[in-house]
Image (cartoon, rainbow, N blue to C red):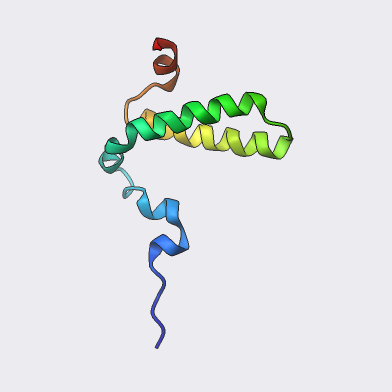
Length: 81
């Protein structure tokens, strides 16, 4: 009899995401998510290689979507500083 692997070991990012329709668990991570978004956004301008640029663009889009769900507009926030 073998034990099933825990969800986190199979897919770490999916394991920490909330159930569909419930983003309240992510509210405590807003500042970290926003900081990561700003970092990725800055890196996208200076990275070489189409594959790396595409990966960063995908990550930025994911972070932008999460911040949007949490009612944080990354475009407005980054201009306020």
